[in-house]
Length: 523
Ligand code: BG6
Image 1 (cartoon, rainbow, N blue to C red):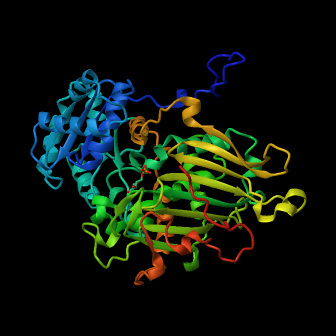
Image 2 (image 1 turned 30 degrees about the horizontal axis):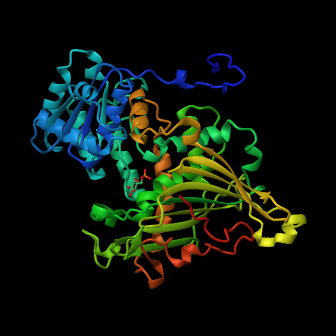
Image 3 (image 1 turned 90 degrees about the vertical axis):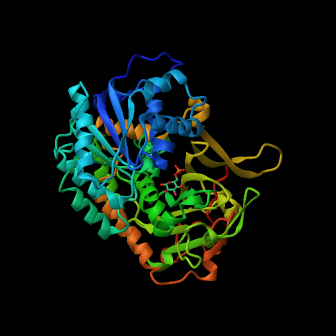
């Protein structure tokens, strides 16, 4: 189906381009709700600017920022420029490209609840001379989920948003996480929104899916025949999925009090990464085929018991020599808060491929390093020869997919230390993105915006994925319901979580696989 571009010479790598499949991105108007917010400044505008600079935006296009505060177009543009200077992944900002980009950007002041504002917005949209800019509308809801329904209802009433199941062009909605706060609220939100838009028009963001290395998991698994025989319960002892962060909750205390690590990270990013790492091969590369497999995997996860879970909350400590205050002392945090800033879970997948293989997931704030990785730890070598002599000192083979930073893939094997003695130690076979492709890592939001404009939902979360992920997160949280944190559940900032999590989550219901210890990522 896909043709290689040309016959490579001996030295050239064989490259297979799949972009030809991508739908054409047609000219469109992007309307950002929450235009004055943090996400717009830090992520959305830098992403759009880079897409513009790299000539990936469909021409013509327009960006309209919708927010409550009164501001002129010029005022908003200079705020955005300040943000760009701070957060842009390329520096300095290219003045000519910025000026050209900014000329397509305008501000619209309005209350989310004001019907009149939407009618006026429609007039602004309808002023565009090109019919595509009037019809192809991408509404980005960078606002609190409690405001989604009101905005969507008003968009629909004003005629800006029309329900349609046609995948081509028309109006689309991009919504940010968290999508609901539990299964019940997520279902309700889905039901409420579905009164106005078809599921194919909704693009639910999980920015982890826009990360280069997360996308590579599909290529890595399904374009390499050597891996498939390894990717199952016969070979894999256990899997560790870690998303550790050095940062604390900072100024997001108010949000975090409602979220906690389980809702903020595990329900979405960690389960999405797990689904991609463990799902069956999809029947095709179409969005629905891939999402079907992810849902199947998430639905096969056995509901974890209380002893499969560790929660934690950071107390004062130090990260990289910098002192950190306790979570309970952070701004907008209840001084008696029981919210978890760390969660680790041992999940079993009840399917043919993974039966009995524990997946250990952990994430936390104020940990010693910022790193995200998936580690497949293979079973021990048979107890003969070297294994018989070395015992536990013989390292188990593993494959680590390093998602960030220092993106790459490492195979740990054992090798002989050179010299006259007979020593064995682990050695690494490593593929590094930077070494292979140069230090170019586009922001996840660039890819996601592009896909949403193209109407390709592969990198977005479907309703059934959200719901099945919430049912797991709800069960995890239900084990803590009404229970105060115990002294063992606190961890000093700068450590790897509570003691109970740094020891193995070693529940002896199955007799192989649990990690002797978490393998902490090293930066
Ligand atoms: C967000 C969470 O979704 O992901 C944050 O709300 C977290 O709490 C962030 O810090 C981590 O993303 P990244 O891309 O920095 O790993």
